Length: 181
Image (tube, rainbow, N blue to C red):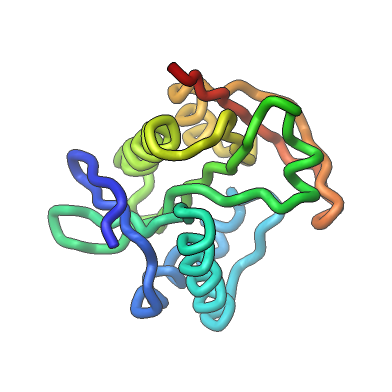
């Protein structure tokens, strides 16, 4: 199901036929180096992740959508939102803020073309217009200068390092509040 379109991209829900493309993203060690606390996934884990995303879409109305190039219909990445579990919500949220997490991951061969920026901008706009949230967070490896620039361009601010009990690690975290009119 198509969720969003930009000038060059389509963001749609994942399906199980996307396993190879998902493995091209989350099975790539270099891609995973830029994702805080992440490890390279096996094909089985990619399929499980896709299934989890499908369930997430049904339950919450959003997920990390598949990013498709309009020009050739190739799946090149993932961009979208994750619902925070109660523990993470409690550690990150403010009393007045319903929070979701933005993330974007792309196949290495498509880095540096502005696709992540274009997809992330469309997702933030979607959250502003369609989702009942007050704040978006994003965990980004500070060494990933391109991703940090994308977040800064989208008016995210650096919160600092946030500790997560589940992974026993500190992650650099950014946030953006959504103004409701």
